[in-house]
Length: 308
Image (tube, rainbow, N blue to C red):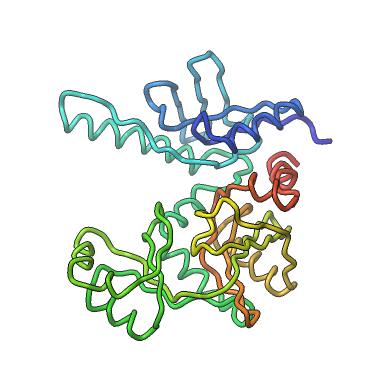
């Protein structure tokens, strides 16, 4: 067994996965601290010396964390910073920018084993760039990419839908479930919404959802049987282990590496023809529900990444 480690978890204090990991690591005598960046700068202090890349975090309960003592960081959630309430709007703007700048500098500079890094998270925030990076890997024939368009142009959207056939649509960044694009969505009233935000429109791929967890070079997959277009809407979805070919597993490892992910949940879809399509790679996948229903050793694998 490794010597006891100090693990920092970035998350909201009531996050189920963060509390679960904290409990397991603490039970094994590791020191764990959950850091909610949204409480900065009002509830904790951060000091940083760029020349030596040395820093410390002072918590309100008196605990002080020296950066060099932190062995690993589990990126569960990044919650930004708390805006300062100041009477002068310009001062409030500067205060929030300065707070965010120092927190983001911590995310760039904090040494230790990151699961996952700020770079990986930022790339996920720019999902179109993430998809373009995966496309550049040329993973066919083992993994294909659905034809995709991101736009707020009525003309481009209509032209894409006409040329592709059945499509789905979803937000560019996420936050809402996938929906089938219908003729009604292409009428002028609905397309007015494009003046407020762009949309992701994608070739609809019929098939079975496959969730692939990649941890370093370890690959574990499960099959999700559901009648819902978006399996997240089906609490009764059947989940069971799924065997991947070596070629598809290697393609998933290549995706994780290209996106700087040491731990990720990759969403694929398997067609009746045996073809796999890639949708996205999540830098902080929820895993407890998958593990409890298909018995993959996901917790053990994540702990290994953090402390061994």
